[in-house]
Every structure is written in C-alpha cells, then in structure tokens.
Image (cartoon, rainbow, N blue to C red):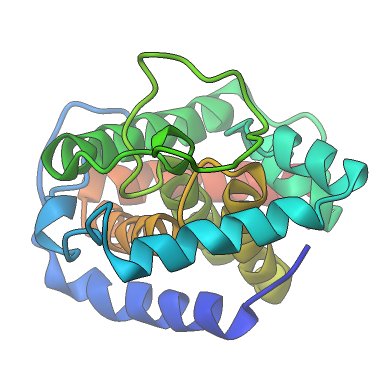
Length: 235
C-alpha cells in the first residue's frame, strides 16, 4: 500500500502538542470522554461542483483503474475497525489479551465514531460514489442509508487507535505510523471517500486522541490496558 509517512509523523506531533490543550472532563464512560467538537476543528469540505472535488473524483477513478485483486481484498479487509485488523498487516500479534483491554479499545472506537458522526451531520458531504456520473466501482454494497462522507470515520479510527498504540508500544511507532496512513488509504482504494475526507478524518482523530489523553478516567484505563497489551504483544 502507498504510504505518506511524513504526514503520519506530522499528525503524531500535532497530537502530542494538543494533549495539553483540552481540560479534563469527567464522565461515566469506561474509557473516559473526549471533550471536543470535531466540526469546530476542521474546515468545511469542498463543494460537490468544485474543481477540487472533481480532481479528487478523478484520483479515485485512477486508483480504481490500477487496483489489483490483491489490493481490493486488502482494502475490503480494512472495513473492519478492530484492533486485530489494525495490527495484523504490521505483524504485531496479541496473545491472550484480557477482555477488559479489548473493551477499552471498543469504547474508544465507539466514542470516536460518535464524535465523527456529529461532524458528518453538520457537513453532509455526498459520498463520491453517489455523485452523478461518478464512474466508480466501489468495494462495498451501496445502501440508501450510508453515512455522509466528511470526515472519514475509518481514518479517524485509524488515527486514534494508532496514536494510542504508539503510546503503548513506542518500539513500534514507525510501523504504526505507516499503518495509520495505510488504513486511510484503503478508503481511497475502496472508492468510498475523497482524499480530503481521509485527511480530515486523520486530523479529527489526532484531536480526539489528544482530548482522550486529557481525561483522567481515560488515562487510568489506558495505563492498565498498556500493561496488558504489552504483555500480550510479548514486551
């Protein structure tokens, strides 16, 4: 998969600098609560009739043109927003991970998705495969109730999960940074998001992760999960 490693590293730096910007926010969630409004942090997406959207759509057609069966299978697999799927391509195996740590990551994923959906409801960008005469063969079953496009929830998930994992496994930070980019790139290969959707999702994810780390409940849960995950990964 194509990588943009420098951008992932940049977003990790942004994430680290943002951690001090969000006040602690008490909540009942087992993984804390990211006190942040994603829609306030990102610019509105390009309009459907803009030159930028047309160029982004052309990029998706080009990616589709050179998409191999192997790449298609890989991108389809990345529809799974699970810890195992995120880690498998970078050969990080977890053995006997406690259910409490699995639930921790599921909680993070759920709350991240809630924040992204709030922004999607505001921006309401049409998915690329729903634009007239788009010419895309998307790697999914298109539904009437598909969520809107901006920002990408998968890209946000990949960023949040990757940043948390980087803090737990600093030995694997470079590989995780590449996987963050790779996970977002799969959305382009699938034809389900524009590049600006993916980038906005990654920026949103970095901010959500920073907001998580400002929360005392999250930090306590993180420290326990970190011990369990490092043991499961053989560290």
